[in-house]
Length: 164
Length: 224
View (tube, each protein chain N blue to C red):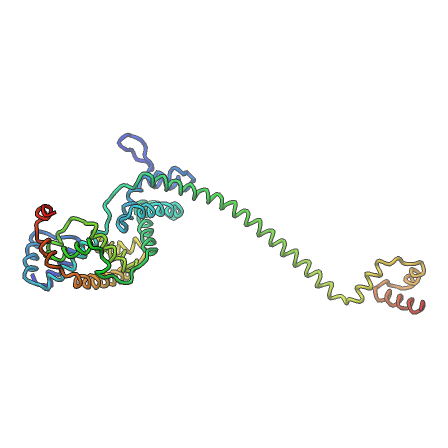
């Protein structure tokens, strides 16, 4: 066998362990007289021994492990039930939040629309609605064809001028 | 249909039926699966970790993940194989959590570990190949050496070089492409060989170790 053949076998041994007896003797003889292959064999042999040592022997786990796993599974199931109620709660909270946002928007729009009406006239109309009309005033208003804010404003301004 | 008879003529539900019952909310059905495969999962964890507490944690994590992902199990496939994939991936996650060593030199070895290494180097390579006996010192040296590899390289190195899995099998277990496994394997071998060569150069056996290594084991025992 050539050095190349020997190394091919050694590389395979590093994974699978020493091969059949005929190969073993040929390789053993070669390694005795070839320092270069012996050096390479040492590296692979050591690697094999070290890697094999990392594997723990097959064993049974401690009986307490099964109890631990069972307890964890129970906890996980309980969490799954809990998370259902969590979801219900989250849904209710979202509905309440959306309702609140809609309410705020409605109030905001209402305020905005009211702000579009000129301030002076709005205040005047409010004052007008609170006022107890006298009989004379009713007569003044009754003369108008249409009782609208502008005509009322004009009538009251005229009345104010007259009273001065 | 989904049941077999054991020697005591009792009906034993098979894996698929137990999965279906678990999915339907039968808590005990999944615990039967835990008892059935607990040892197998524990020993898969033993391929990567020697400490019993780490193996137990991984076993627990594997079953919790399997329970959460039970709806992804495909009817007709092997439940054991599906579970082992989860177990190997849980080991991989643990490897990723572990702190990686930047460097490794002879100075990082304890006295006993160094002695073990020197004795191994004093023997002809062929004898080291034939060595069957495992030693705690060898495991400790290996642990320090492998801690310098990335989690992917370490996993591939152990599954391919030590356990003899093919690149296709590793790819299937991890959900990686074959080319990714091959690249990882190439890098892992190169990195490990480089560190091992450096270690071998630094740990040239002393003459005392050579004498000890050449002595038959019976003589060594008498000497103690």
